[in-house]
Length: 240
Image 1 (cartoon, rainbow, N blue to C red):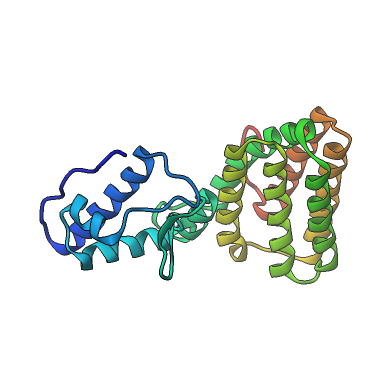
Image 2: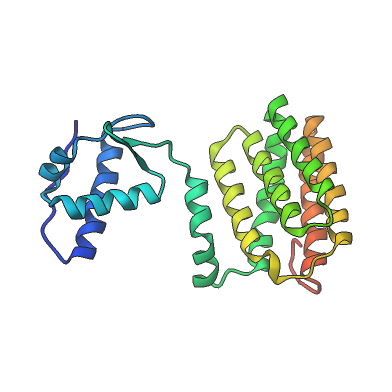
């Protein structure tokens, strides 16, 4: 197995971060996957040159990011990395610290959703269709409850990304949905808006179900145009 270089002692905050980074490098260099065990604490202390306390703090960082998990009496194991979930945790900071607004999100989604819908039409499975139907049912049943409606709306788009068979699309759809969710309470909303959006989602679904890629792409773009008009009245854009 590959090893990591000794980390020079520095102030505690930097040392903990450096250990966490080196452990991530170790996992990558050794191509460790879900369920693989990390070396024992004694071995990690030896290979990092750090004492037990900062090592444990570094492992806590990795646990918080969903990279590793501890099993009592067995050790520390690699988890399946859910990049979309990690992005979801960071999306509130991205919104506030990078000045992302609803318009920025819609500009990206206009292109992303259209491509994803077309790819989903070509690659979706019956399981994908079943999950999207459940999301549509949830939107329909919660048309008068914004929080629940939006949650099912996000489920629909995330499943659309999953339906492409491309994990990168899935991560991107989940991430962009998380950002939009962070911003949802900053714009006008109503049952009428949700009702119109539901019809548009049903049109996307019907095209995906029938494996009509061009129609799925067009339906996704029409949905984004209408959503922008509802949420961002007066927005000027070459594509929206």
